[in-house]
Amino acid sequence: MTEAVFILALTIVATTLVLVARTIAGAISGRGPSRSELAQIKQRMDQQAAALEESQTTLTNQSTQLAELQERLDFTERLLAQARDRSALGAGGARGAGGAGGAGEKRG
Image 1 (tube, rainbow, N blue to C red):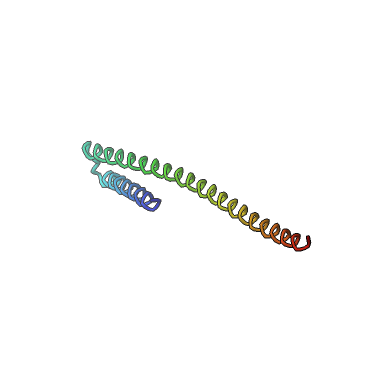
Image 2 (cartoon, rainbow, N blue to C red):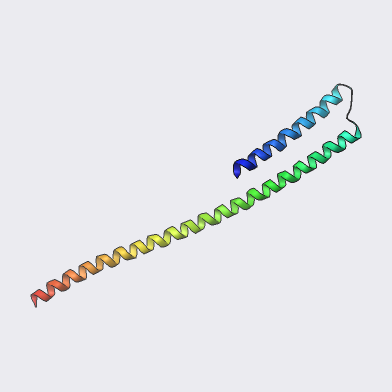
């Protein structure tokens, strides 16, 4: 989703720049934007600002979710490592006890 958010933000910025450039070009050519054009530009910019804020919120939420998933993965890896260590210790202890017990029985 990071790529989608980036593309959305880039589109918003590009559209805003085009609108501003048109307004400046109209002012330089002697024809200023009418009130209705300015109102439309303002409305579009407000919509784009809202879309950008929504994208930022989504990205923040996804970052939080990713951090939580990483913590869960770390926890799970630690549990698996502990289980492996316990089984390895248990298997090693059983071999040593069985070997010593068998040798002790033969001696006695």
